[in-house]
Amino acid sequence: MTDDVVQTGGLKRKHGDDANVRPAKLHKLGKKSGFFDLGRVPPELVENIAANLHSDDPRETSRNQTNFSLANKFVHNAVAGERGIKRVDGHVKVDFDGGSPALRRFNGHLKRLGSLAGKTYHDLIPPNGLPDEASVGLPRDHRRDQPLAANDITDAAGPILPYQKADVKAKLVDSVMDLESEEAAGETLNSFARFSSGLDKEQRSDIGHDAIAILASQGPLRYYGRIKAAEALGRLEMHGHLTPNHRMELDEAVTARPELAGLLEEQKEALVAQVKRASPGTSHTSSGPTPGKMHLSYQIGSLEVQRGIAATAIFDDHDRLDVQQAIAKAIPELYNQARAELDAFVRKDHGRPDVRESLAETNGELCNHARAALQASVRNDRGR
Image 1 (cartoon, rainbow, N blue to C red):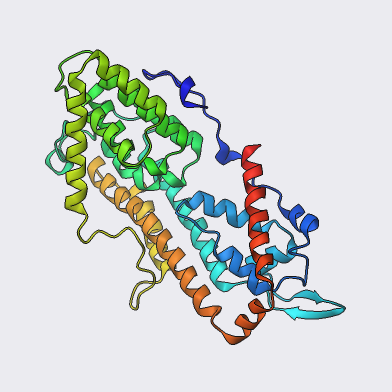
Image 2 (image 1 turned 180 degrees about the vertical axis):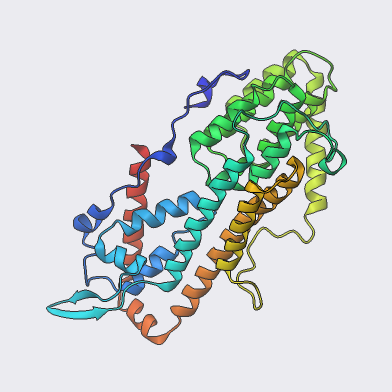
């Protein structure tokens, strides 16, 4: 779906769920190229490529790992950890103790975190849609005797949006414009804009158009829902997620009502000030494994237990959301920790003399060519 066919005003939209497309059958890659034929490529190189397929997007990382392991059985064994397989080197069969322990651990953590994120999201989102409630700017700690606002829930779910399928995210975004309260809708669109990097292109487009629809609606300029919609548009612009079609619609809205320009500028300035205040001491990178830190498996296990308690114990809505929000915030942090541990292991392991010699014997162009072939195959699969 492209931006120029998006309907504003909360109409239902149809989304293609590319996340549901099954992984490319890349086992044919080895047959076509011969790069990964048994014995031609050292297992250390295969592990090195696999260890560098992770990204900021956990679903993309999972697809990359799965696709690469399907290249052929040799690659699967080297990545997944089959023991006691044979590697043919010329006419000599060589015992090969296949599989990287670090990769097995990483992929295990990735699956557990993905499962936990899916269950936590399911716990957070009410089956009948978001509540038609707004906070009207009052912090949740000051209204714990009141019902949860719609944006309380999306604020809690924001960190785990990258783990959700496209159709799941689209359904949640579409539900915002079903809210009767424009204050609740404006707050929730602003919440989505805060976590827009975890949304797909289509959902980012939708929240931009919906925010413009609220911005351009009738009523007083300082209307709370309009202010939050303007803030949402400022966040989208800050994140680089405003499209040319968004800007064209904004120009039309400002032309029809020039005072909107001042409101938009005011919200942008407030956001810039927020970023400046938050910048000192703020880090968005993982510190990696540190001495004395609880083992990652135990940290994930602790979150799994907490999630089970929150889902089944007798809590009021705010107390339950406190636990679920803490879990949702911890999941991406643990994902980055898992990535840092994998990177640290690869750097350490590939510093060994035997591994350095093995990698040195392999033409560097082979590694680059293999990566390019994998990337091209994945792009082709996404285009289908």
